[in-house]
Image 1 (cartoon, helix red, strand yellow):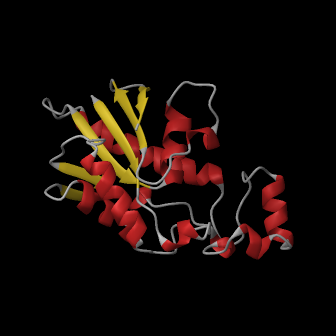
Image 2: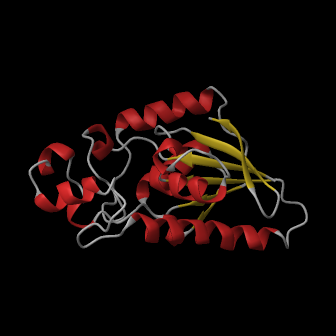
Length: 194
C-alpha cells in the first residue's frame, strides 16, 4: 500500500517562525493557500476519496484545498506536539529564557514546561498511525492512504517506523510537502520526497 504524508500549508505563525503546536489552532495564511494551489496544479498529490487529518484547522483547510471532494477522517492523536509554555513564541522571544535554554541543551528531546516531551509525542503519533494501519488489514481493496498532518507528526512517525540512519529532525518537510512511502503491513519504506 502507498502512503502519503503531507505537511499542512503555511500559517501566520510559520511565517514568524513561532512554535505553533497542539494548543494554537491557526488557519492558513493567504500565502499558504496560494502555495498549496500552485502545488496542487503541479500535480504533486494523488487523487483521494478520503484523507486522514489532524483536528487542527491548518490541516483540515489544507486537505480541503488539495482534496476538495475527499472525506476528512479526523485523527485526534495526530495533532502537533504540545509546546506548553513555548507555544506561539519564537526563538527570539525566548533566547534568554532559562527553561527554553535548558530544553535546547537536550537537543529538544526533554520535556517542555507545561507541554509534551518528544518521546511521548512520538509514541502518540506513531501509535495513531499503527492503529489506523491495523484496520487496513481488514480492507482488501485499499491501495493508498493520505495523511495531511503537521511537520512534527511526520517526523515522529517516519523516524519511528522507517529503518534509516536519518534522525528525527532529518525528516523535516516544508509546508505543503512531505513523503510518499510504502506500507506492507509491517514496515514503512520511503519511496520519494514530495
